[in-house]
Length: 428
Length: 162
Ligand code: SF4
Image (spheres, chains in turn cyan, purple):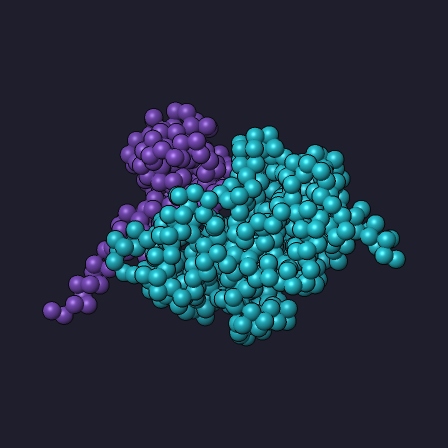
């Protein structure tokens, strides 16, 4: 029977030759990811009560990212508890303040095609960029996974999104996802697996593919898969991992998909989501001129090395507008180091950007960079639900690093392509 | 009986999330039917349309229905995380495409094991997706954690020769 990539991974994890869509099966978990906010502080006490300990400490990755660095006694307390738990359970893969979990996992070589991975965070779909079946689970389920190393799953159908064409200069994976959120809505994925394919995806570096998979969560998908290729293998090798058998983890040609969405990206404009929901996305031209107070380049989906480079491309030799604050929180310590080495950071700070600590920062409203009542921010993050980044009446627009950087320079939301075209003119 | 797209914010309204769950339960579905929480009785079945429980991963959305005594939720489809959370917390959730034939107040007998819903009032029955045995025993134990506790206790007994 022809199978999708999702079916193949689930069948392997369930110890079966094949699984049918809709079937509920029990799978062995290859890797479980926890973070400070939903991890030990919530699951620790229940696990204690069960008295089982962790099934296999080498298969657990724990990251502190949501509450780092501590901004008050409460967050410091959670971090202290997390560190103590890591030591007690001998968690070797404990990354303390090294970056956002979804970026740290691949950076440290933990992901590879074919793995069945769970994460205690809704953006765990990010792992799908590496050809793993990775999805988010609640705290109760995480306790069971840690105790037994297993979880149940209903085999999902797969929705194929075929991205054809070539992205124009100044347009990125973030613009693609915002456009898709507008087109399909927040339940477009219906807890199915979404799989991205096509030449526009193949042409992307891993960090851009991660943005697609990350925001599959915004489509309501359970997983956001991309079949592995040479780009995937190279990234994994450079991260010190072993990509394994790439050929094995491809969907069959005649596999059955729930549906296929054709998405030609050739003429895609930069997109911006209006406050409230990523599904409120429109072409940037429709909100051009909206005055902002803050521009934020951060989060798992918007502050990886490629993202910082996009911003630097716009900011180089320019200045952030007077009265505007541009905050940059790199997604990981490795990102910071690489951006320092290649001059990206310098371009940002010389333009007037404020460099923030690595971590989730203001994305979930837990770290530094929170908004006051009525303030307007344009941000590279993935979600802009009411009040997420601060006061209830604050407004968050979402855009690509290009768009956020360009808006910081002009003091109002604007199309970044103007800046990039100008630059070509200057140079040539 | 509810329509399509009942979200987790309606099931567990954010403004009451900081308080105790019992209090939260009193406001369950208030935004679409204020008479719901005061009117339900033990063993009642909630019937929904498409995408029941879409939205955030908050477990409280399923928890409040259990606290109100709801025995099962039957819908044409579910928001995925809600579906997982419901079963893990010991609340029966079954997918049934034919469920729109039900009228408010009908007496329903949900047999999740067999994949059948009997409508005693209309003298009719509908097919639904059956739940596998291991999920049924999990639900009967009251959810994932009590189920694990039981399983571990049993293993301990069997595994200890003395
Ligand atoms: S950066 Fe934002 S979206 Fe990403 S894991 Fe942290 S809080 Fe979640």
